[in-house]
Amino acid sequence: MISHKFVLNRACPILIQCAQAHRKPRWFPVAKSKIYRIPKRPQLSEEERLEILRITNNYKTQMRAVRKFYTDDMVKEKSTLESATSEMSQRLEAEEWQRCEELNEKWNKQIATEREERRKKELSEMEDFALARMEAIDREKRERVEKASEQIKREKELSETFISREKLEEAIDYALANPVDYNYAIDLKGNMHTGRDTPIQYENKERVQVSSN
Image (cartoon, rainbow, N blue to C red; front, side, top):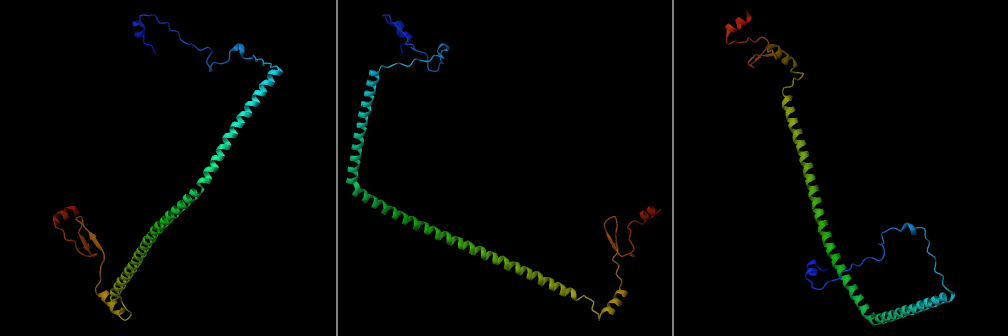
């Protein structure tokens, strides 16, 4: 692009002409004067039609021959290459097969090792879980036995105070001779006074008399 400074500093005049489009852009719609206009189909003479048909047939025949030539050449080259490299390809295929078998065997051994380790770990975890469960069951049984033993011992100790049929008369005489009063009272200071007939000892008798008056 020519700068404005270059144009001003040039001694000789320069003729500049912008190239404009010779037709309207493609995105412009059809002109209103040409919307319903149907172009007339060109009329060809018989000789001209036959000549165009002959030229077209010659072109198709020549192109078909060229394609056939390149296709045959490619097939020939491919068959030659395959015949020359068939033994090599078989050898390479055998080597590739052997390599795949070795790699598969390696993977199988690795997977078998990992599976065996995982099985041993799972078996160890199952054994630990079973052992812990058995210990918990044994501990629970021992606790139940200890609780039962303590309850039996307590019942045996209480059974010594039970009144049998032979000691019933003696227990009745003892209860009548030693009566027990389970009544009790609580004063304002929170002291407990047992017995219904127990006298209450007041600290300030004058206050009691005033309150009674």
